[in-house]
Amino acid sequence: MNDLGLYVLDADNHVVEAEDVYAWAQWFESIENRLVAYTQITSAVQVSTIFLGIDHRYVGNGPPIVFETMIFGGPLDQETWRYASWDDAEAGHATAVAKARAAIGQHVESKA
Image 1 (cartoon, rainbow, N blue to C red):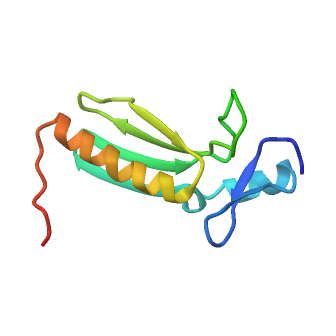
Image 2 (image 1 turned 180 degrees about the vertical axis):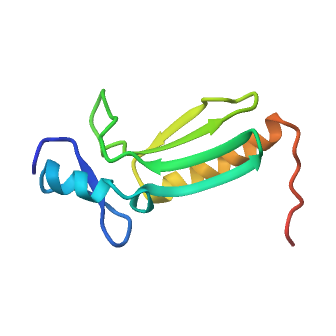
């Protein structure tokens, strides 16, 4: 345990503690390591979900909060949600995309 609050993802996208700040910085350098999902809804509205690599759990106990979804543009500009796991981040991204689309009145045809 390094007590730095710095994390990376393993090959299966599980959150693991970084060995040290240098290993964390080297891993963190690539956006490909950190991008969970990105959706361009319109030219002015995007939803991005990333791995933060730094624990954002400031209060209470529990797993590190290291993923974040944010809406950029539109009526929900800067709305943000954070998560502890890749799976929760993926689900949160889908929810944020639906919320952003609904906020701008964009309907998506269901694929049956």
